[in-house]
Amino acid sequence: MDLLQVAEEVVESSPNKLEDIYRLLAEGSFPSSFCSIKKKNLKRYARKFTLEGGCLYYVGSKNEEKREVVVDPERRHQIFLESHITESGHHLGQKKTANRIQSRYYWLGVVKDVIDWIKICETCQNAEHHKNTPRKCKPVKVDRPWEVLSIVFHGPFPPSSQKNTYVLTVTDFFTKWTEAVALPNNDAAQAAKVLANMYYRYGAARNIYCNQGWDFCKEVSRNLYERWNISQTITLAETSDHAGLDKMTFEGLKSSIRMAVSDNPSEWDEFLEPILFTFRTSINPVTKYTPYFLMFSREIQLSGVLANLLATDKQERKSTPRPNRCSSAAFQGHDGIFGSSAVQPLKKFKQTAVMSFKFENVLFPEGTVAVEEVTS
Image 1 (cartoon, rainbow, N blue to C red):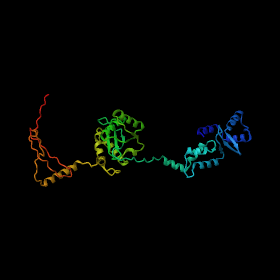
Image 2 (image 1 turned 180 degrees about the vertical axis):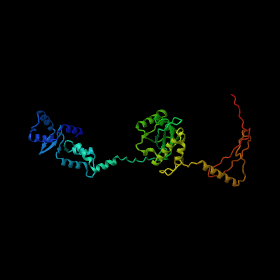
Image 3 (image 1 turned 90 degrees about the horizontal axis):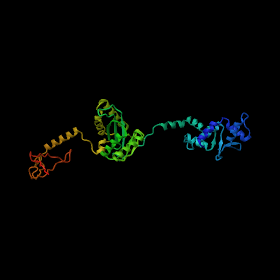
Image 4 (image 1 turned 30 degrees about the vertical axis):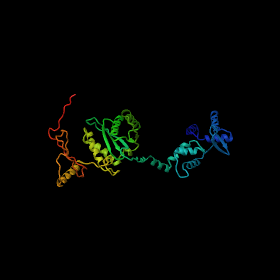
């Protein structure tokens, strides 16, 4: 039965209307206080009911259904419990409970009674508490670098000297590699421009999560296609799990950006790369590798480490005797360009920890390279 129809009947009914209908169908009499108009209305409404074996049933205006009319409050509550709790012990919600009751029984105000009883059901209230608790997002499955990305806007911040007020971060779910770009605003056109640059640098992504709303996602996709002919899926990120980073790393990145803004109010956008360098070269707690290693399949060489390796290699070369040492020129050209046509054989070099081969300096004799003027 339509719930709106039940509500209408509640409004137009008096508390004793069902008893009046029973008396009318059983005895054919009206209450003594009824005037002719009330008698007419009661008789019209009684057409929706029938009396069988001393029991009153609701059959509806088209006489297509038959539901037992329940008047006793205690029996109504017992029917509610039987309809609300399934055989397996599961508690149904308001709509399903009301539908189960109305499929077999009838009384005025069924829906209101169901709502009130569920409000005082301890099991339902505990379930409602857990229902309102934000559910944990299912992890995004990724198999390779730059397959799934997330974009997050940070800001607004005080305008820098370059008029930038926002930072857009782009994070790869697989490697945890993060890019950050300072922007003058946080509209879809700016985000599309950043993603286009990332596309030309790293290639296409299967999906990109964004936390700016569905309209923003559609606008970014439209800008990418119309301006750069890039077809890219942008999906709304429903939870913070779609930021691409674990909570601790994500909060650390946000804190570092805010600190850069605080320490350098007019030039904070020039300090984003040093911030990113720290995160890219630090071991991620989830992957157990640095984003740099997962992105490029090698660890980064820092300037101090590289200088030490070069110094060690130079010392080793000095202490190791080399018979038949060649001159500093490993090869020479011919045809008069390098001053001699003699070609010396290439040296065989020893592998080191720095490179698998070495380069020798080639010094051109002064005046040996001539520039010819071309006349047309």
